[in-house]
Image (cartoon, rainbow, N blue to C red; front, side, top):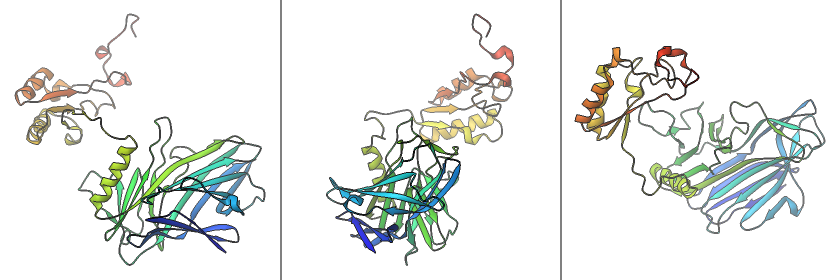
Amino acid sequence: DAVLKAGHGRIQCSFSREAGRLTRYHMLDTDTGMAWADGRWDFLLAVEHNGNTLNATEATLSEGASSSTMKDNSWQFTLTPRFDNESSSVCAMMLEIRTPATGEWLEERLILRNTGRSKLRITAFRAMLSRSLPDRDVMCFPVPFESCHSRPQPVSLRENVSYECNRDGAVLLSGNAGLVIARHPTSLEEEPHFVGVKRTEHGFSLAGIARGVPEGRTYIELKPGECQDWGVTRYTPYRGSLEDGLLRYRDFMAHCGVKLPVNYSPPINYCIYYECGERYHHPKLMEGLKYAVETGCTLLYTDQGWEDYFGSGRWDTTRLGKLDEFVETAKKAGLRVGVLVGLHTDSYVWPRRFSRRDAAGN
């Protein structure tokens, strides 16, 4: 019964409201004419509250002017999850949409607040845009790419009917219409949330909050009045190639501070961890040395001992020969050698005589 619009310039989005519920979320690139979202808002919230399990797949958009407040190119919408077996509200959400004056990109942020009087445990959360399959195929390239076994290639969302990825970011491309999806980096103390792209029965879904509860955790607990901020996802439409999209992703991360120092010039490092198969042997060391020289490396890094135990660092002379002799051979070839040294590791894989001990014998 109503359509609310946010954004201006190149990228625009609109929300459809039916009987108060936020149902559809559209995102349009006005330059290429590509609608990157044209379907229902794929929303899921599961919580535990006062011993009850509550599930919501819809949210109500608050009535009145307060439901959409614009300030400094930012639109804020207040949403109330509609739980299937609970009439009273136990939480509220704020959806913020932000664009610059040029309209080059659009950022989305979701925050959930515990409005109840007791603890709230979030056991599942998802908020994704959906897109029907267009006439032209849509290719997805997760960032970073998912496999190191072959040259990475973008994935056809038309052909791969069970495709799903959760990565730091993604580039979508249909013809020369592209979309870069990136997350604002979090601090090292915070758990990251990943960009998700998933093939569905009639199309695909995409978002920065595909898994609101990080992998390895069963819930997020909020005390009364506390908030869960799922951070910021940026959508940047562009016209061009896959490489153009990847460069835009890199530039955005560099703008956020994720980049190498200006004068960073490390030695080129060739690690032979993946070359040695089940166990290290001297012929494999020499083969790795040859590859390193041919590649123009200045440092050969050996990760010896991993076949014994993670972080072992043990140089087994029966299989590898004498370390001093290998270092000398590498030196004559123009290479320095980096040798893994296990300073802290479980020592049961080592003979006791290998361990350094302090004055107390530890």
